[in-house]
Amino acid sequence: MKFSRLKNALRGFYLKIVRGDGSPEYIARGWSLGVFIGCVVPVFCQLYVAVPLSFLLKASKFGAIAGTFITTPPTAIVIYPIQIWIGDRLIGGNLTFAGIKDATVQMLAHGNFRAFAALGGEMIAAFFVAGLLWGVIMAPSVYFLVRSLVKRYRASRAKRKEKKEMAK
Image (cartoon, helix red, strand yellow):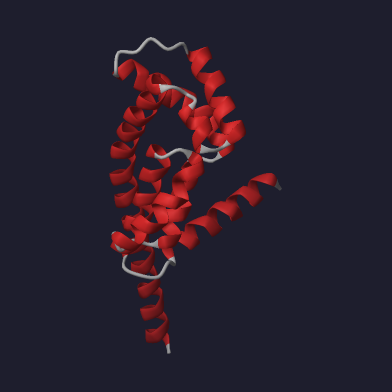
């Protein structure tokens, strides 16, 4: 029973992606932008950045918004400490994972820019360094995946429609 709910939810999510208005590139650009913003920008600021950029970059607004949900407060509790720890290692810092985790939990509990600034310079730098790394890796991957899914879905739908027309 639970598996079928998950399967239906995933199918609905898939259909929401592939049935979007616009070209496959437009849809993919929105999702890619959203995922990039979701990696680089703190949770409480993501939509303020993603929506205006989606207009500037002529990208799917829905994709840009939904793509940011790669990080939400429940997932950020896990993702952000790891992201900051990796970023800290990349910049040669010496933060402890426990300290990072505690600061991240406090920041997410308050959910505002002041709480993010309270992380301190080294943690903020580590956050952005690793976020940029994840964003640069994930955004192109998401772009090509979503574009491919949309194109395949539309080709399949066109074939079904053509078959149906020929059967008449």
